[in-house]
Image (spheres, rainbow, N blue to C red):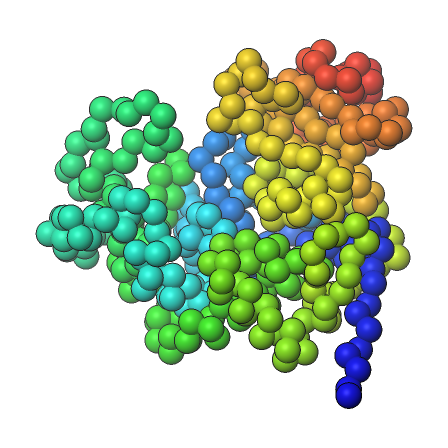
Length: 409
């Protein structure tokens, strides 16, 4: 009887270093401002930048690039993503990858299975509109084909009265556009003031991408799991599946196939109650000396169970929590220092005043608050300068606020 090889065991500290390296935190930020090519290479490495409409501090997709590469010209990211009203050098495109995301154009064909499975993959009105109002969808596609790129308001459909408890108040024209976007018939040609401009897919993506053969569902999903595994370094199956929001049964099957093929190495991580997989090419540094503020939508921490398992850091975004019930604040960013998440800060950009407001600062248990405050103050000054804000103002809320305020002063 053939014995199975022993499963390698990893300490939690080693797994954390592998994860940080896979996400690009094991190297110093470049001395020179990164080029559009370096920014694109980072997004390719991560697989996706999540988009979010909240702009109280800065747009969510801008921050992961700063966290890893430091001060950069945001117009370079805008140009490769098709944002703003300047010239476009299309290298990234939007799709539902991990939520609404910017992805490298090369990855777009890997999501055709999702586009084709709108009934299972899309939500509520996006899936229903084609059954309930097929003429509206057809007319909207004709409008985009004739007049694109268009905004949702250009469909001529009036917005309904706001409904209590609903996050998005979409009118039917917007729903039809989003159905066409989900199914890959239209794409985001631009975003101006973060508002999508929809155009036909043929006018957005290069012909070389459009002409690629559609991979089978298993082949596409396996490639997405490979990308997730490279980006995570070491991960459980739910971690891998969540990265591109694969259906759980599909994620389980694809991970098992890659393990059987020898493309993923089964490992055990100290303290994890689920088996894990190691990407064979993952860098395994002996030390990581990172310093970064992390957007709530950063791929290092966007899957909260993994964040807690990897760093012992329980994190919940409180944007949709009533103000009186918030523990840490409205828009809270974890602070990565070395190999640990050591603090969290509630940030707001007061653009009229020209100030970065630290509305709350909280240290994790057991950290050296004097040291953390000094490093956090330095990082806050860097990010304020990058955002064109002249000062950092610390409010006296949180157990780190006094020490941080003293360092800023």
